[in-house]
Length: 385
Length: 68
Length: 163
Image 1: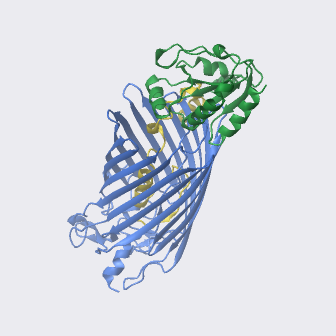
Image 2: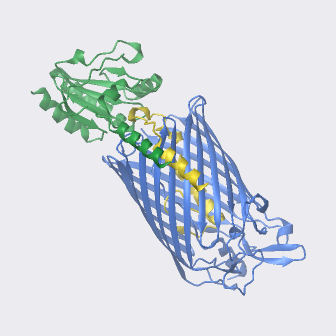
Image 3: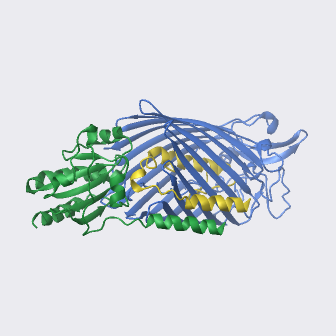
């Protein structure tokens, strides 16, 4: 096996969690399953900017590129149940930072230098039961890559107050992840490792007026096991992580504009000394001819992990030079267009993500590996009316 | 600051204006849902979770992936 | 601040405790304009019949399930003295008209954009249906609507028609 082959496995980052549990949508009427079966497909292209020559050894280099295909099916079953099936395929290629070294002109990234493909498949099945004052769901998600496997279960339930003005929701989830890095001439940090994630969430949604709703949520997540990135050369992380989030959201409909404002905010804090703020804003504008235009914006900023250094000291107990653990700020601008034609709906989304240390609310040195990317998606939905 | 936040939360949650069941047509609109597109939401959450150090906040955390 | 909160909560509770129509009560009057500005049929006009007073809106999902079923029951039991009186509570009448073009029915539809009748009935969710007997008394209250509800409703109506 060549070093080149091994390097491609840097595609696998020791899991940063994904796929948050989907919360049931607010039901304005008595709780009931969807009336019709819905089917949707999406194709997306995710592409990171090349790393600049002055930030990497060996000149500029390509980074990650991912093709993503998604399938979604939601169907009512009988009087009180719905069934959902979600499948996602990803095809990834490119290079990612291996480690950061010091040069005469400052720190530079050594890229993995590979360009080979890796694929991931995720299948999720969920069922939801609807009762008079709320609903409850259970889901199972399986994710598989060559060197990474995950099984996750989640449970959630919601209860409406008698007047229907307030909805209380609680959710728990658990996942078991297996990491088996591909071994080769370049040694990885791990052979066969495991990681468990336990998470709990509580939330309350409240109707504010005929046009507005607000929600608040608190979550706690406990990660236990191998949290180090096996494909980074200078990475050693604690085997435990406790995370807390406080989140809030607001929806307001403006009759005069036939548009809805979406505001979402999340504060995150953990015992690795990482804290972050994420603010999402979207304006959903209805236009004639069943067209909907949604510009959206996101600001994100995080503090660095206590064991992060731009160039690490591998003599420490824990260390990492992963740009994802550095202090930075990130801005996203995006636009989404949707058009409904009878039972069909077509949509397209484009977004630009840029990150920079100077946009951060937190102090820290800039990691040379900070990422910028483009994402475009095309989707088609059908409702069996 | 904490005091003010607490007050704001209490007032919002209390929000004395009762919106009657038959007055919830606007709130039932698809564009007023917390998550307007399941697949879009899933993918964005995943991209952010794999490129940033924090995640969650929209529910209990799901399973991991090796997404880089 | 606590005092204010307590006051506010008290007010919320007092509002929530709005006593609605119960089984055995006389059905409150329904005298509303018909859809499209027509003269609406009133509940009093239907005295002597068994009437299903149905509060609905275009945005209410289960209403789409209930309409075809109510239409079928009315076709079957109408000749025996059954009628549906559907009260639309949409703010915008165009939304109601669009819904009716998708789910057409032949029973009378009246409009109450102001919410006077749902307030009088004290409905707690959408849809809510009140089964009123031949003497004008509420005999059954039906909140929400599931596919299998039609059969049960049909049996109850038949019983009331036989009285």
